Length: 483
Picture 1 (cartoon, rainbow, N blue to C red):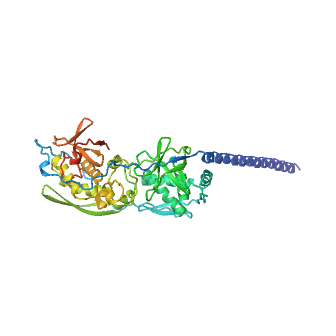
Picture 2 (cartoon, rainbow, N blue to C red):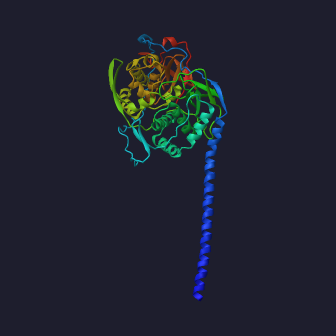
């Protein structure tokens, strides 16, 4: 009897304890759901607020035409320097005391990376020779049919915010670090991902590009005119020959990844920005993204002081392809940009013995003659139909080059081979360079930061250091400084 009472007591206590635990668990689950809902509401609040903002704060803005990099047309034909006009040094010239060491030989094939296991829902594509894999997000269809209006754009934002986009944003950020993508390469990557997912409507593509870039922190905007949606971005660099609108005294450029847009008249867009999306794009090129190398050979020839020279350089066609539609920007970007590892090694290692043991003046004049005569001359209008500034790899790739292309190549060679300071010279319709010698070199020069820089024109055929084209003898150029 006594044992029976003890058993009943234990069962009752156990029942109440279990009931209490279940009650506590129910309370915990209730609290957890409330907390998750509050967190979800907190995350989505920014999107809801922005969508509300998009319903009302739209205005008409006047599209301004793209800025021109040169106020006057470039010379169609380059003059040839006369031997009689060449300045003759009156003192013995110093030889180059120390030539920088040759660059390391590049790795022809990219280092193999471990391939991730194929996911059930993923997208893969080639990005300049690299096979990339991203989680496949089920993008919802957006109602951006004609006529476009504020409400449709606002609803489109809410629809995009309701997709499972966070895994995609994270993957983009990881690839950006791994591939060392600059801002323009990142824009191209975002556009290509969205193309793979959407496969069609351009308005939908522009909208998802806009959404993803805002989530990545860029001050991207959309504008519409009639039934078309456009992507707008501010830039810390000038972008030439692309239309833009001024919003809050800042240029927002129309971004396209293929042919340049031809726009005029009024478009509708907004002044505000999504929370924490304030970055302007930068077009600076401190290094090229990590592409799969695609080296291509080109043999070039030139003469200097009665001797013939020939060299076979390798440029990287992946770099050329990346730069094909790169926006035309400030000259400092191009003068400061690198050459590919392939070109750097092949060109420098072959030119190095040609300048070894020569005086500063002889070495500079040899490099001048190489750039002046080893390549055909054509203006950008003649070759492309528009202005396009070439980096060294592109100068080796394209059939012809003009003044700024040759100045960029020459400045790169002087710095890498001779270790001398170089600046760019910007005339109204012409680009040249100037070099700071350690010797007293005769001829035309400019004074910059207390130092004398001798004018060196990589386009004035057969001209030596210190010579200026006849058309520019009385013109004072602007200085282009670069690192």
